Image (cartoon, rainbow, N blue to C red; front, side, top):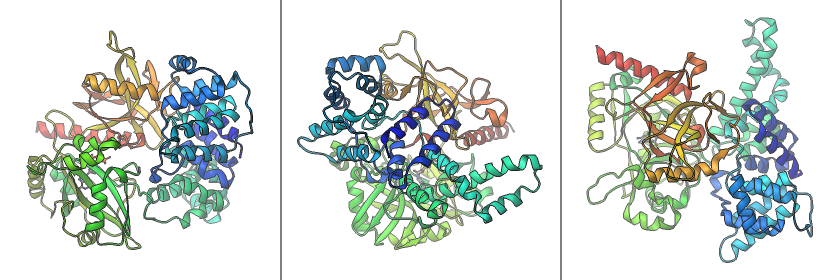
Length: 616
Ligand code: ATP
C-alpha cells in the first residue's frame, strides 16, 4: 500500500477535534489496508516499528534528524534550527522544507508502507561505528521520495513523537467499527443481541442493535488484547480471518499479559466485609515486573508492557537460578534494599537505573530483591482461571530459596483486627500498606476489580491514596524564571468508557525547580496547537498537550466543581482535587493507566463515608 494513504489518514486524525471522528478515520484506514501491511500500519499508529515487547527503540536524536532534513532539502542546519524554534516541531519543519526543496531529488519513487517501515527498522537496528551516518542516510532516503505531508509523519516517528494521540483503546475501537458488518452476518450473535432488545421500543431497536454489536466486537478484541498484548499481531489475525481469527490467539511466553489492578477500600473492616476470609500481603513500593521464562531465555516487562530485560540483569540471573519451571509467566515487585540495614529503599532509588549506562553500577550499589506475588502460566498450562490460593501454592512450589527472589509476606485471615495488625506491622517497616486478595478469584487481566483491594498508609488529613493524572495542557506563569514559563499544569483523569481524558485539577505548586525544568522539557515535546481530540476540558489551557505523561498527585480531598469535567456526566457537577500537589512523574504508566473517572467517583464516595464515620 502507498504510504500516502497512511499519511493522509494521519493528517485527518491530527486535525480531528472529536474523538469519534478520529476513530472513524482510523477505521477507514484499517479497512483500506491489505493484510500484508496491517501489522506495520498498526505499529505506525502507535509510533513504533515493532510490538513493545521486542524492545526495539528507533530513538534518533534531533540533531541527526535535522541533518537528514538538511541533506535532502538543501537548507542549512542553521536555517532548519531557526524554523524549528518557530514551529516547535521538526515534523512541521520537514513538511515545509520538503515542499520547497532547493535541490531536486536524484531518484524519487513513490513511498510504500513497506519501504518506510523497512528503513525505520534498519535505523532501529543499526548500532556501532558509522551507524549515525547510516541512520541519517536511511531517513534522508525516505525524505527524498516523500511528499510534504508524508515527510511530516516520517520525521516524527524516529523522534518518538507522532502527536496523534492514538491510544490502544482507540485502535481497538476502530477495529470494532470495521468489523461490525461481519458480526452482523453471524446469525448466532445477531439473535443473541436481538433477544436482549425485546423490551426496547421498535424505533430504538435498530440504533441500540448497532451499538450493542459494536460493544460485543470490541469486548471480544479486548479479551484477547488483555492476555496477548500485541495489537499488531491481533490486527493481522482480524484482517486475515475476521473475528474468528481471535480464536487462535493464546497466552504466549514472551508476549505481555495486561496486569490485574487493585481496588481501594478505606478500612480493614470493609475489606473483610467484602472478601471474607482472604489473603493479605505486604504492599511493596517498587517496580512491578512481569517475568517470562522459556528455558534460559528470560524477558521482563514493565506494567505498561515494555521490554525492560536489560535494566534488570541480576533478576534475569536469579530467575535462571531460582525458578524451577521450564516455562513460566509470573509477577513480582522489584525494589532496592540496603543490604547493611535491611531497609527498603524508596521507589525513586529503585528507578535510578533507568539510565542505561549505569545499570551495572547501580545493580551493585542497590541490589534488587524481587518479591513475587502471582503466577499466570507454567509449563504449557494457563493458570489464570485457577483460584488465587491455588496459584499461590504453585508459585510457592516454583521458587527455590535464594538471595534475590522471595515470596511476598502473606497471611490468611478473616479477622479485621488481624488484618489491621499486619497492616501496622508493615507500615512500621516502611512499606506502603497491604493488598488483600480474594482467595477464590481468577487472575483478571487488564482490569481493576475487587479481587485485589489495597489499603495504604494514609497521610493525615489527606486522601488515603494518591491519584495519577495525565497532563493535558498548561498555563503560563507570571514572572517565571524560564523562557518557557510553566505556571500551572492542567491535568485529567481517564474516562475509560469514552476513551477520553476529563479535566480534574490545575496544579501550580509542589514542584521543585529541578522538576519544573524536567517538566518543561517534556511539555515542549508533547504540546499541541489545538485541544487534542481525546481531551475534554472547559478550562482553556494556554497551551494544550497530548495526554502522554502521567504524574502522581496528592490532594486534601475531592470536591464538586463546576469548572472541571471529570464525572460531570455521571454526577451533574464535575469533580476536582482540592490543594493538589505533584509527587512524582509516573513514567511507568501509560495515559490510559491514569486514575479513571469511575475510580474518582468511588474515592469521592468513600471519602464522604469516612468523614461521616469520623464525626460519629
Ligand atoms: P495501580 O497498580 O492500582 O494502578 P499504582 O501503580 O499507583 O496503582 P498502587 O496503588 O500502589 O499502584 O497499587 C498496586 C500496585 O502495588 C501493583 O501494581 C504492584 O505494583 C504493587 N504491589 C506491591 N506489593 C504487591 C503485592 N504483594 N501484590 C500485588 N501487587 C503489589
